Image (tube, rainbow, N blue to C red):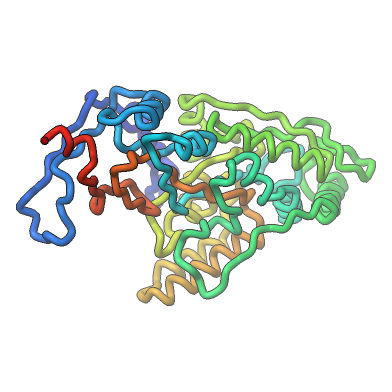
Length: 369
């Protein structure tokens, strides 16, 4: 079941929020042997999706048995090494169209997050190479802007924000001084030319990104001497956060929300990704509308060639990057645990079985003998 969250009623915009997924224990798909393109398939007689197993149970079965589970999707980065050591399973990975991003509440009271310098400072605090290694077990790439590295190659490519604690402290202090001098929102920063805050920076996240949140909080503390309070939300609480964020009727109760985004637009990522985080009708935008972004987005919508899409997509990504309209962290790989007798081809966007085949030694063929 899905619920709708209304973003804008003037020029209607809304987003669907999944509330409940009712599934039968097993779903059986049978091959269409009359499919016209014989070169493409089908290569499998049938596929059975098992909804009667938890992710942990499915991973245990694919790693320790044969004949129960052949493919497990969305393997956690911390479980990848176990799959690699398995007697029965292999790890299949791909640089997917995914991004782990900190949504910055630019209207937050007590911190100068509506100042570009402050947002740039937060980005400069983070050593993304270490983040990938320590929090993502090496199963990701540093994120430069919002566009994952696996997306279409633009005319130019951005580089991730450098890890520069000294420059971060300098920029944060300048933004803080301007705020405490009254030219921006009065709030919770001390006025003694220090970076000390009267309250912690509130970081919200979910279970799957708790290690990332801890790394980010430690990075802020080390670089700009800001304490952070981490709140780990359940899936039900996450749904309410996303609804509140989309509807924009009341301010968020956090300063940064760590969010794992995934999409299906590889040719022009800003059509979905950047619009969601920054656009006027963006369900993930936390802050005032950015007219310059909307102008660029309108330009993108008018493109009729691949080159034009690439050129304007780069302009949008660079604008979001320069303005530091998010905390750019990493692009996770899509990880699969696959039976060693299964030839599985991963896609960057979705889970597909079009090219999937099994060997003569696969348990399903041995049982026919």
